[in-house]
Image 1 (cartoon, helix red, strand yellow):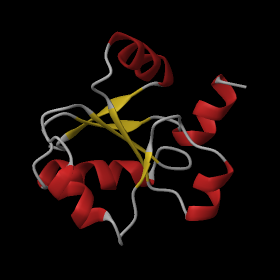
Image 2: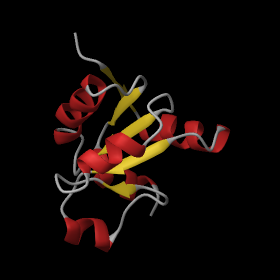
Image 3: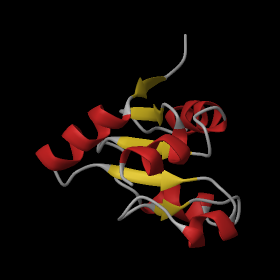
Image 4: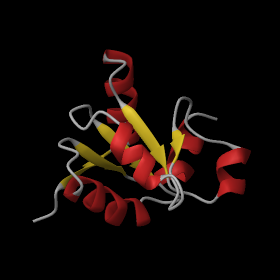
Length: 102
């Protein structure tokens, strides 16, 4: 059983407007993140992973974003194993987010 849940774009929008508690991490490469990302998201890389996990609030919802919603599933599962309680993988990834918000 995986330790994360799937989240649709609409669910993320609803969750974000309902509460400021949502943490969003983007695991795409630096150039893609620089070209565009979900407002307020953190660029999560192997280089800052340890710092992020030690300073983030593990009780707040955490949404993992990648390109198309595939890689984020492994990352979300890993972050759940690190102690994050409420972890989501964004279905469709940044690609779907970008289409829905264009």
